[in-house]
Image (cartoon, rainbow, N blue to C red; front, side, top):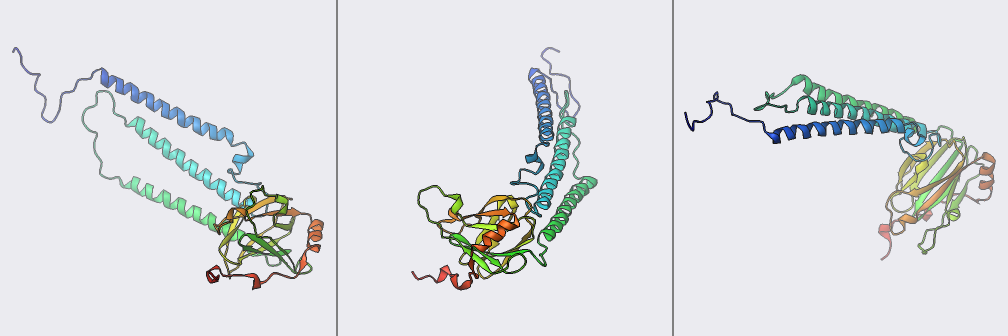
Length: 306
């Protein structure tokens, strides 16, 4: 019949013709999939090849793996956690890419695929795996934290480090290698517009390969004792003592700083740690003032006269 419409289609279906635009979309989708797959492979390959460098092996953490007795524990926890996360990420990304490729809309497909409201095995899997990872991370973190915070029963050196606006006091307490109570008082920092002479900074001396207990407290506001190379940081509060336990294992000079915003000259609240042979440590102690700097130098900023 002249001018008649196309043949009737079964009820519930539509007539579609594949034109150049559809074929172009198929080619674009295929190219995009190949690009994504190649990019993912390149990233994984680059990570694998770069894994041979020492910086990558310690997870880009500062310092050296064996700087103190605690740094190997911290490094292993950090690196192994990232390895686990990367493995999970690669598997997840791989499954996502597989779904994109395997369930892509194919040439000549009409309508929607069969819709599924739930899948109990997959839901159990997606719940169990994250819970397993969380409990695993918790176990290893708790284990390593207990090892790091295990007190030294008879430390070779006990040092009371006192933070103040904006410097540090070091009290070397009698016991172990320290024959008498001695102290070193830091001079409060001031901005002068000149470059800082690192040799004038308050310096904490520690003997190499000797167990150390560091007692941390504050004279005024909250400070934080941080030596990046030691991979440990601990807050310092007035009228409260926190502790760090470690054995320095590598001689050298390490930079430290306050890591808690503590007022006007916070950025100038710097110090150094020198890990030296025992003879040099004893020589340094011999030149310090006798006695300890006690709490009579503490102050409460909230009670300052205006």
